[in-house]
Amino acid sequence: MELRAANIIDAEIEGHYGYFPIVEQISTRLHYHDFYEIFLIAKGTIAHHINDETVILSAGSLVFVRPDDAHYFSKHEEQNCELLNIAFLQKTCHAVWEFLDDEASQRDILTPHLPPMVLVPQQELKPLVRQLENWGHFLYRDKRQSRLALRGMLANLLSEHFLTQCIIAHETTPYWLQTVCFQMQDREHIIEGRDALLRLAHRTPEYVGRSFKQYLGITPSQFINNLRLDYAVDLLLHTDQTSTEICFEVGFGNLSHFYHLFKERWHCSPNQYRKRHQQALIP
Image 1: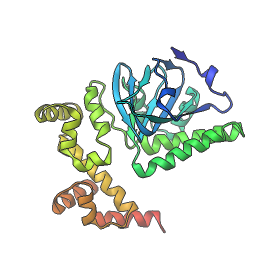
Image 2: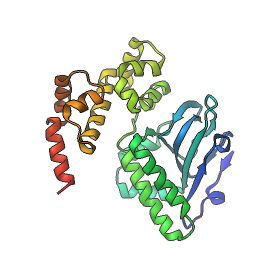
Image 3: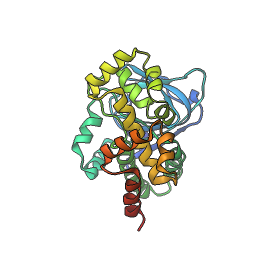
């Protein structure tokens, strides 16, 4: 089934909002469209079937669906799912890409066989849901303002999430590996580390290790450590926790190892990083 922008999207607004509070309302029929779509799982889980692959999406999953991506949804383990989506014209997306001025990232997101997906951090999920809801609620009150708000929102979503958080894998990277990398962004999995990665992969440690090296150029341990360091930076900038508390919060079991990896990546200690960036953010 093909969905066309002319039948769904107001040309003046350039976008359309959809809210589906129960899983039975979400499309179970294979379809593609001539416009872009970004959807967010606000609550629950659902199976997303996309380009002949399947991934289980949970709360916080944010997916960028491109024109001609063929997909549909199905219930996962009898659980409910609450989904929000925005559909927008191709010309709108092209205008946002031109504003962002990042052709390399644009190619990385638009050309692979599978669309990019990220997990929105838990503390950012409710604000993002409210942002999408607010845009949808006021959609037709002022079409010009809605169009401007849409473009600003898309630029923010792309820059804040897809250009900085999503893992861009090579076209030949197995889908199971891409899915594991996506699922490992969940903070509970980051903290658990290697055990979570192997459980999600359903493969032997040796096979997982070879696959990470072959397709991503890093070891599973390097991958997990990078996720933990990103988590640590978030806590440094947005909490009052000490470096020691953060070390163990993100899953490192050794303080000196945490300091070594942090300095190797950021060229400064955690306390120095916090001081520099808080000074830059707060005069």
